[in-house]
Image (cartoon, rainbow, N blue to C red; front, side, top):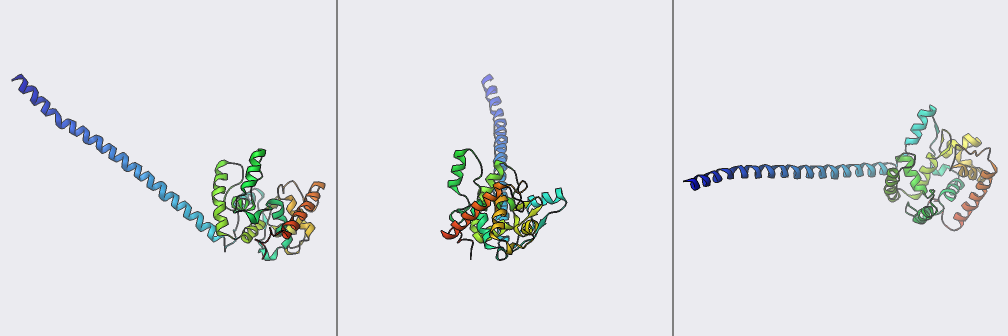
Length: 254
């Protein structure tokens, strides 16, 4: 009788085990569904962001960027900035050659990232390897300052911009959004600010001096240049003549 009673008790406990197993399975199922949900959110979120980036970049093939994050910030700080957009056809050709010679002499030879310049910069333990294409992407779409997150975005976005825009369009945007003095953006505003002329009428000397101040426009003057700026401007004009002679300006000159 005792054995029979024990057997009945054991038999009675089995449904409880099944119930625990069902609960455990339900928890695992919920966890799996949650993981699938998170993966979908990440996937669709990534696709949405990528779509916005591509559409935004495509728009600027035909629409001139109305402003930039840095320009807006400076506009708030200074209560206004000066910028007048001009098409590249209304900019003295020497100006385009001068900024390319000064900032990115191999502009026509790379696809947005100059890997040789990056390696040299890493070997020297210094920055300064940004191409004109990278600077345009940073100025138009991203933010200023040094950070790995911005550099990573810039490294991904730059080849996309190179694939969508022409080299001539990249130079055109660069010349119109670059800062040439505090609150002075674009070559047209800079030409008037420093020399009282339009960008179309810049002389080689004036273009060389504008290109020479670009690395540090708040600390250098194109109209009252230091001996360093004068020397740099002459070197830039020599570089501009070189890239015109060897064909490294062909990609942005029509």
